[in-house]
Length: 162
Image (cartoon, rainbow, N blue to C red; front, side, top):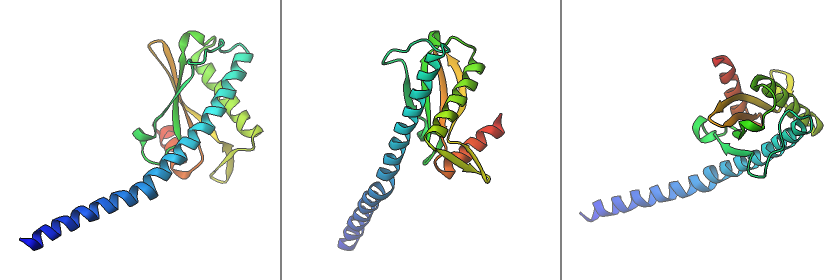
């Protein structure tokens, strides 16, 4: 009986130590990398949206109009992709045209800041608009930050689905 209690205590201690080590060396650093990538993507999207506002493709946005959300929890660990949404009433061009313009301004932002993704021996834009859709009164779009192989494979998989 005493041996059984020691085994149970040992298993509980091993489980606790494993979870602590996993949190300290996997979960927390992954979360920090994801939040840093979100901050960089937010800066790029914000600059691109401001450029589109200057060219009258989007009406002036309020402080709370541009939102970003993590979508990595849905697609898996290491995917640096983020969903943004703005009021559809602020868009002054067609959605396909806006997607193309946003892709171009994000590519320009990456070029200006010397940020490139190396894909199949070619330099590609580091920010890619992977999807854009309207839901109710919001225009949603996903931006992938091609900073790691997991995100590059995610974008490749999405392109195969289309």
